[in-house]
Length: 153
Image 1 (cartoon, rainbow, N blue to C red):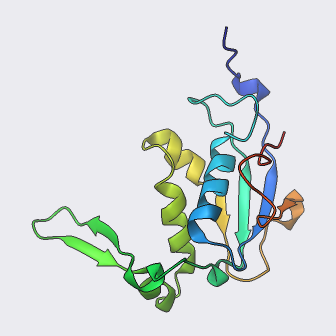
Image 2 (spheres, rainbow, N blue to C red; image 1 turned 30 degrees about the vertical axis):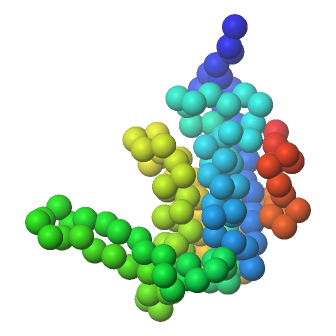
């Protein structure tokens, strides 16, 4: 029988990730697993069991190949002919490098109200400084992380 976690049993930790020279997609998979709670042994799909993630130095994030110039993010205004596109290069030029990682993580989460709540646990900052030092975030070295040792309880 599957045991589902109760609201009273949920505990959240804080993790800090340095995005210096990290590949966007690989970093986004790690972050999305942590904020969703899939790295825990007591994962419950319908509960917000995830941890908080602070990502710093997001302006130094990398893409493989020519994706920085050629990849396109689409959105629609809702009006006829209202499709808009933007590249990661244009987002960086607009001083919105955090939006690149946020879009990648958001699209790895399932859609719905729970995913919107889980996305609020992602804190992205340019540079080293962030206001979450009082939460004592545990530093994760993403260069050593792979699919087998992401589990943290």
